Image (cartoon, rainbow, N blue to C red; front, side, top):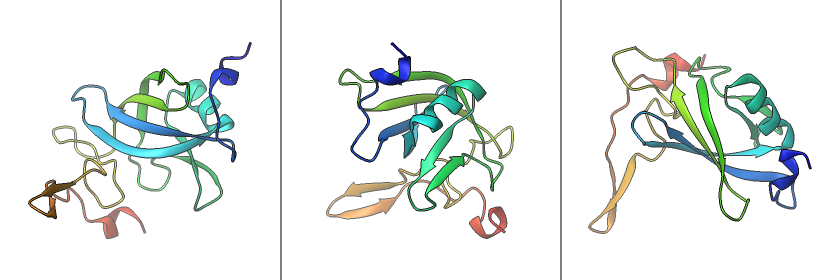
Length: 132
C-alpha cells in the first residue's frame, strides 16, 4: 500500500495540517494539503500546502521567502490530521522565523483572556514589506 493511501482525505481530497516549530514546540500555523502537496513536501523536505483560496499548490514562502524546512511528517491516530515538525526560515538568524502573513512568528497570536482576544506576539516585519 502507498503511504499516501493511509491518510483519510476529506470529501474534497484534503487533510488538515499543523506546522509546529521543531526547536521550540511553537504551533506556527494551520493549513490544508491535498495528496500532491503531501507528496511534494516529502520529496522536497519543504512545506507545500494546498491553498483553498488560490485553488492551487502553495509552496510556503514562495512570495515571502519564509520557507519551512520539514524535519518530520506525522499522522495522527485517526489518520486524518498531519503534523509537520519544521524549521521556519526567512527572517533574521537571531530572531524567530515568520510563519504568519501578518508578519508574526505564529498565526496563533491572539489569546482569549477575560472575555476578549489579546494580541500576544509582536509583528516582526511589516507585511507590506514582505508581500509586494
